[in-house]
Length: 389
Image (tube, rainbow, N blue to C red):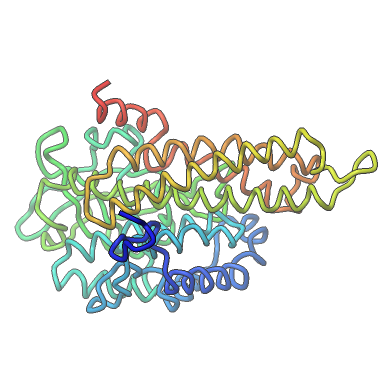
């Protein structure tokens, strides 16, 4: 068939004028509300709670949520436009805190919550009044979810929860946690998800963890000492939590891959611009062949990572299985970022090792992407299983 007359051929990638409007809105929000304060918030170790409300007013927490629940009812292409463009914040750590709200807590409550749960937890989260967190990782098990020890026992119409969580983003100030607990036997079959209000008696934030990067994103260890919540707070079916977590990981890993894609693109923009402005030995640094070729290699690798992400977005948008492709995208982009941003930092020389330019923050923050949402080693194991290696 002649492509020139194939009017029913779908456009791929499917970015419309509406998606471009999302990009422009997000770019303006990032440049006005986040980027000017990125260094300040890094030093403070947290960003203002008010930013959640501002993001909510722009609809950043409900892109794929149904309109009847207060969302925009858009698609995964809209999500891609959003997360790629968040790089204009110059703060991957702020992006992380907002992403946990918009991608890790809200969608699962919208998809699986009862009407009562949606009214109690979803609506205040969508408006930015409540901050949400995802409570899965523990000191004895991060990627190995089946080893979970935090336990919930039945007591009449309540669940009584005891245990500990670690590495919880937004944990120091969350109003509620989508919390994974053990309600049955050992192994993956005995895990449930519950909606846990942090005002519950017996809950405590142990400490805010100090990190080498992502400093504006608060990360906490949490303790649960005989915390009593209504059994009606179970999200979905009891003892099916492991499967919900594995499903939720796909969205988390794809948005992580899209987010780091945007940071890499922004890093190259900064580096190439600096290379044009900075002179050495009578010529712009970026005009030297060593840098021109290095940037050519990185631009090529970045484009490959972009299209791998878009393949995943296309599959997710059509409701098809994408575990293999998403795992590859997360692995490829997170590992590429370590090399690409290292080189982008290098062209800045000594200035790259200061906080004067965002590139140093990017270099510190992207290190997390090979660890969070499943380490690179776990990604390789999943790919090996998917391809029956």
